[in-house]
Every structure is written in structure tokens, then in C-alpha cells.
Length: 167
Image 1 (tube, one colour):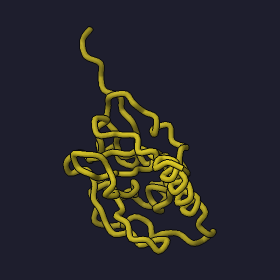
Image 2 (cartoon, one colour; image 1 turned 90 degrees about the horizontal axis):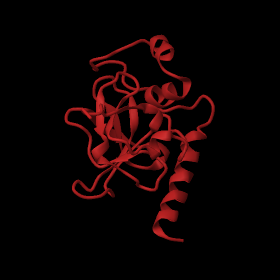
Image 3 (cartoon, helix red, strand yellow; image 1 turned 180 degrees about the vertical axis):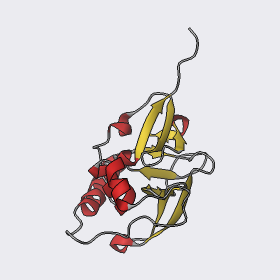
Image 4 (tube, one colour; image 1 turned 180 degrees about the horizontal axis):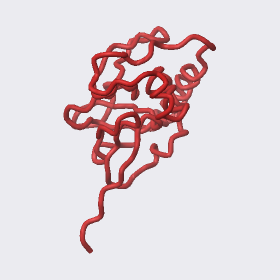
């Protein structure tokens, strides 16, 4: 088994664990106060799909290899599905082999982080700095120049292709 197969197997296992939380047992919802954009639970539910709500507001995780954004290769930017804040440039996207869209650097002043100790692990959670929506986690095994891997849930992102220039 090579490194990529090992990463895929581990990522799939973590995704299954995250997706199989016991009914009624959830991570704490994104902070309700202190963000530029604040909405009631009902407003968030009306705005987001059930899958996006589960990830952005309840710290869920989508299954690996289920997001079409994992294979997105066009120039453009990835924005928060909750508030449309631009988060990542396609120039920083790379194929991590984990099954989730991955980036080596966010746009300036786009994301915040906090410690996540769910599942007996210590990880760094990444959230939208404007609405507090859960995006994914950042790890220190990414490519140069940063050495970071922002492993994002595709359902928490919207892709906006770059405008085509004059012909």
C-alpha cells in the first residue's frame, strides 16, 4: 500500500467516524455571537441545504470523495456557502488525495481557527471569520510554500469561476 492509498483509507475512516455520530450527539454549533453575520437557527436552516447546515452550523463532516469541488480545476475562488465571503483562490488548491478539497493557503482575513478535540484527537478547526461557519480542519502536512493543508468540506464552499477576459 503506497502513501496515497494509506491517506485515502485513513481519510475515509475518519469521514465515516465523523458521519456516524450517534443520533442526538453533536459537536457544539458554531458560536452564536461575535461574528459579523449572525442569524437565528431558523434563518440558517432556511438559507442552507440540510447537508450544508449540518457541516457549517453543527460541525459535521461530509463523506470523503462526495464533493464535486474536490475535482474542480478551473480558475476562480471558493467562498463560504453561508455568507459568500471569499475564502480560497483556486491558485492555492491542490489534490491531497484525502477526498476533500484542499488548499495550502486561505485568502487574507478570510478564516479563523480554534482547537477541536472531538474523537479524542487534537486538531485545528477552520471556520469562516465572518459568519463562524465550520469549514474543515488545517493540518501541517501540505505542500510548499506554507506546508499547510486546509482540508475543507466541499458543502461548506461555493465555487465562483473566474471571469473570462476579452477575446
